[in-house]
Length: 423
Image 1 (tube, rainbow, N blue to C red):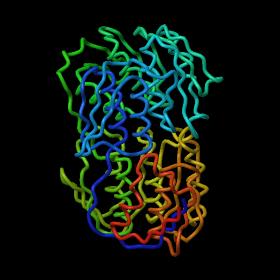
Image 2: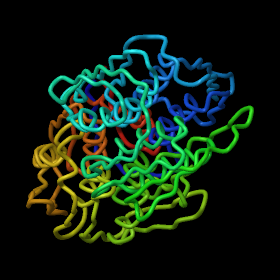
Image 3: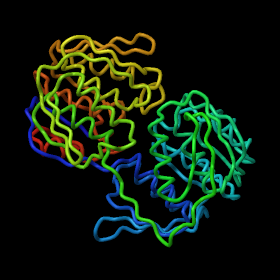
Image 4: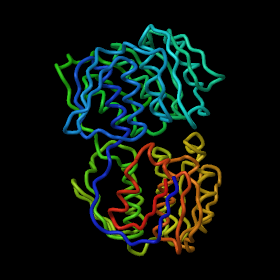
């Protein structure tokens, strides 16, 4: 797909899409709960669809109701297929691998696209300590595993991604790991673990922690006959809408929980610091452009914010500094280098200095042909920046957005952006 975005002024109101971080965790918890779960406001991204496919292959029955809700019937992990495929979802592969290992059945776990190149050495090291046999492709996919996983006191490295820990926490909870302790060194993206613990608590699993360094499991509460879980609005996708409002017009974004544990809610701090017009209420956020100034932001715990932050910084006077570049290497693309390359085409200079990214803003955005690098957040960042360019911005492989936010182009069109889509 090729998308052309023309310079535009936007206005109006839009509702945020469903959070894939919340949706995927809810799917996993519904599988493990062993009962009936109704998911309200389910997501429809590629990652969400992959999660639904995985839990069905692991034994769940999924039906979509006329009202749009999804009902999941489960009796726990009982694989129906010898292989599960997590698509291109980093959370999916890291979360569902320990969950699948609860079964004694030999299983192959695979993925597609950039997921095939992401390191999975974590599992080679950790799963054998939990009585799980594993064979990887030299630390890459596919993984061949055979459980059942037996919870034990272990120490894990949390520096690469908190998603590995999310999978272990859920698997331990479902395995009844009463009294077991997971010790974590150098945990990154702590807010995502808060979201995991919140979902687990909703489904009856109690986990306490000491400064995110030691996680202890208590006896699970008796499960009710059925659960209902409402998926939050997505702060990760909404960050692009909010930045679009800050640079290109007065808009209102609805459906976001300002008390959410989602890490990317931190976009509000950057928006406040850059000096845009901002009004935050429990049920909606109003945002608009003013004279924008450079800001300093630490994205170590929310690395997915780098693309919208760069689009914002490109429109701010001065040099913006963003910390956390070390977290960008193992995304759908190497996002530090990809952002530098694609925004250079738009006339924006980005310098990488160790763990810092420096964005020289307000130097004039120009029309250009850009490429998503098959990375959903790069495609969205280029589209938002295009609103302030001096000519059309063409985005190649623009359908990368389907991974997390398939309605993105439609949503900014609804706000008045001039967009042409060629499939």
